[in-house]
Length: 364
Image 1 (spheres, rainbow, N blue to C red):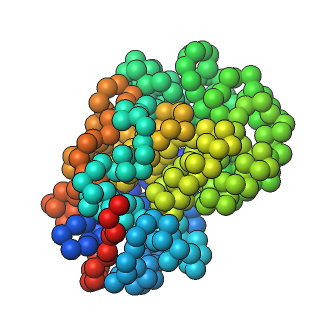
Image 2 (spheres, rainbow, N blue to C red):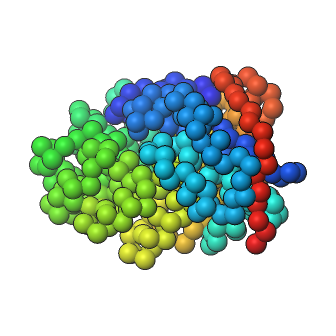
């Protein structure tokens, strides 16, 4: 889906978002999943073209013609496949949508969501200049957003944070470093303690836990891990060594809804609060994120956006829309309550594959 404006982060500029959509069918029921690792292997080692090929050639044959009774059983069927979390996630999310539709319940209720209405924040990528950034933040604050997330990278760090905090002394702010700093930047992170940031998201390497634990022991500002948390086991280890005080859960990054719920529950037991992130998916993927955002231990405004924030036209319908300023309300339709728009799907599809065979869902 082409973006209205380029999205700029520490690892590059994106003008369009590529996703893999998966539809699982079982008799008269179906479910949709979406996972977007993006076009380039920059956020993670995965990229969308490899995701598609891997999904078609390796994952789909493992699950067709099988009685899959739970998300955990689906994950067990995929456990011998190393990595490829985004590819697995699209199938896992589709299974959960199918399961909820079969039982004629909203997905957020199926997964024991507690709050139908969820808070969300405003995010801003790296801008051309500070004036441009401050103007955009002011628009978001005026619109009622409860927190601001700022992308950061070398050269767009302390000076940027200082300018924003001086202009907005009272708003909740955190920065997202997308893994582009190292422990050599320790003095800079210590200075960030003066700016009352809610957290510093993924400051160090995308697959690191050890250095994050050292950094967290040296600064007062909470660290939030994102890219480093790719599994329940990685979350357990991060908690065990005190590598963070927050965890961002992206269902695509962790292999799907099943693992996202398990990470949420693990964090809840350890009193590590969570929030939900996304990868600028269509309303299909975003609706899966919205369902997860209703869980009890989601204690910070999540990264879920109205479709019009990034896209001229969403791939799916109905598009994502705020129910109130800085809030979304999970719908009461079966499953995620969202479908691809047939014309948009035809227009945006780069490659597709169909593989036959029933997927059986056992009743509750």
